[in-house]
Amino acid sequence: MTRRDLVYLLGGGSPPRFRAVAFDAFAILDPTPILGRAEALFPRRGAALVAAWRARQFEYCWLRALGGRYADFWQITRDALRFSAAALRLALSARGEEELMQAHVELPAWPDAPRALGELHAAGVQLGFLSNFTPDMLRAGVRSAGLGSVMTRLLSTDAVQTYKPDPLAYKLAEDAFGLPRRDILFVAFAGWDAAGAKWCGYPTFWANRLDAPTEELAAKPDAVQSDLAGVARFVAE
Image 1 (cartoon, rainbow, N blue to C red):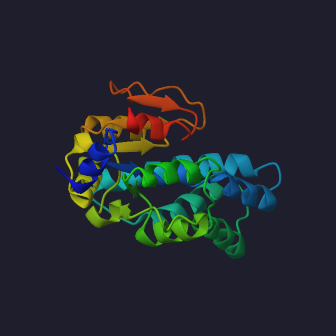
Image 2: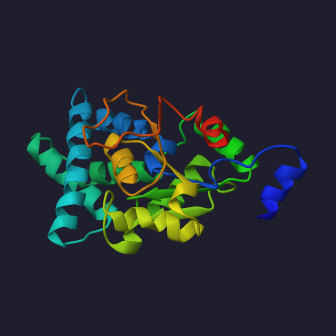
C-alpha cells in the first residue's frame, strides 16, 4: 500500500482508478494559433496549407519510422511545411517559414485543460506528456501554457528514435512512471493515437476535439468526450 492509498483510506475515500495520466501534446496544447498565422501569411489559403502540412507531418513520421531513417519532429515539421507549401504553389519565404515554425513553441493550453489538470494533480495523480514533439518543443509548450507545476514527465518519442504508434513509443510512459500499463491512462487527441495506445494495452480517453469518427482499427477508446472536462471524473470512477 502506498502512502497516498493510506491517506485515501484514512479519509474515507477511494484512490483514483489510475495512478498516472499521459497526454498527447495536442490534447493539452491548442494548435489553433498556427492556423491564424498561416491565414495571415496566405489569406484564404492558410487553412489548406495547415491541412496539407499536418497530414504530411504525420506521413513523414511514419515513412521515416518504417524506412529506418529517423529525423526528429522539429525537422519533420519543417520538411512537411516546405513540401506542403510547394504542393499548393505558395511562395513561402524564409521569414514566413520561421514564423510558422515558431508558432509550434508558443501554443496556449486549451481553455478546459488547466482545470482538468489541476483536479488530477490535486487527487495525487502523476501527469505527463507522451508526444512525438521533441523535448525542446515539450518544454516550450509547458512554459507557454503555464503547466510547469503539474506536468512532471515530458516524454518525447525522440528518446527511442521512432514515433507513435510504434509500441516502443508508448512503452516510454510505463518506464517513466514505473507503473503497469493498466494503472496509466493515455489521453489522445487523434483517433489513430487512441487506437495505438489501446493496441499497447493502455486504458484510453479520447479528447475528440474535432468531432472525428472513430478509426476503424479494431481498438475502441474506453471513453470519448469533446474536451477534458470529464477526464478527472473518469479517473476517479
